[in-house]
Amino acid sequence: MNDITIFIFGICFAATVGATFAFMWKSMSMVQEELRKPQRNVHPEMKEVQNGEELLVFRAEKKE
Image (cartoon, rainbow, N blue to C red; front, side, top):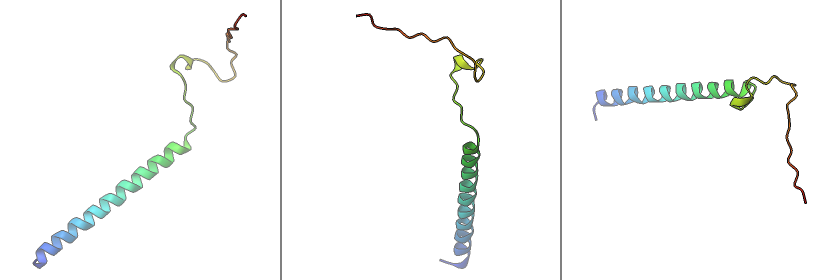
């Protein structure tokens, strides 16, 4: 190998390492942002219901 080939390999290696580091950094920052948000999974039919509002409950009992 000549010096130009080694130089091109070094540049490509440095670019790959830099891109990998940037990708990991951005991925982890996105994960941290998602973890800071309060998680509240709401069923689509319950979107209009406010917190603390009373709901009608039906409990079927088996007759013996």
